[in-house]
Length: 310
Ligand code: NDP
Image 1 (cartoon, rainbow, N blue to C red):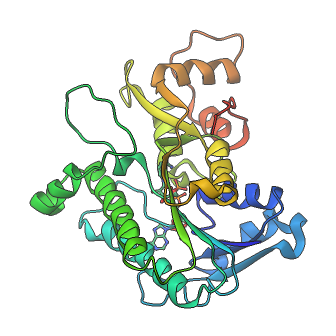
Image 2 (image 1 turned 90 degrees about the vertical axis):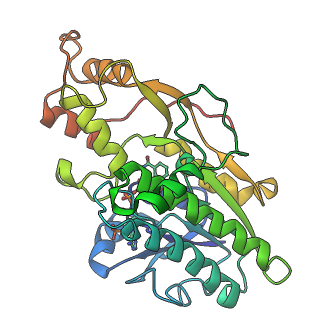
């Protein structure tokens, strides 16, 4: 079958495209400009006409994906802003929510062959900032950060704005699928990854060009005081997450499911030690990795692959 992947030039999406191609799917990758597709054309040239590209200049426009959804069997919607630089929360909320509802609306109207839509959400739509220890599952929703953005607007912390955008976008997707369930020929499957780490194969030439999660890893490896101490969170290897995007299409049972895709917890110190070992086997006690080595490691070296059970 043929799969539309939105935001195809992104960190996660390039792995999703590659893994789909490796599993025999054809892929239509949607990017904002032809220029952003050049790297993909080169990368996926070995797959011949199983990879094609379409330009969708502005995902917030009505009908932006009307052409893109025609003739595909499934959709993987990954396009959404992930950065901490937004002043006005709408910079994140608009493309996240309108992009998601827009691609679903296009699928409803013109995706006559679409059977499944997979939306890349996040554990940002699950967690809350309660200081109490708690067990979270797919039943939890991050309404807390949505409320905080409503109350504080621009003054809300950058992470709060981002998490609110993911929470609102995912809610909008489920609401849409529910509202039109009698009418649409597809079902919805949502993947909720925590921090995503692992090798970058998208176009990136400087540390500042790294996507948000790889950039945070870079900062943690190179700057004392960033993500310091024994703290951590949960993570998933980008290659495992890409495979989850393929499985979400292959498994009937993934329909109408919200799926946390996590390899479990990490501590920043684990990563520092791992990188130090990787880069300099004989200098294992050095505390921080030099910037160029860290960047090379993020872009060119394999991360340890951790088998994830689906
Ligand atoms: P990237 O920043 O590498 O990719 C984001 C993609 O979305 C790019 O293709 C980008 O296009 C596109 N995009 C961003 N903003 C807009 C916009 N306003 N209009 C149109 N397209 C836009 O991020 P990731 O690969 O890390 O993220 C992909 C998805 O995974 C996102 O939905 C993110 O929320 C989610 N996610 C990521 C995690 C992580 O740790 N990396 C964790 C959990 C979820 P362009 O290059 O043109 O800007």
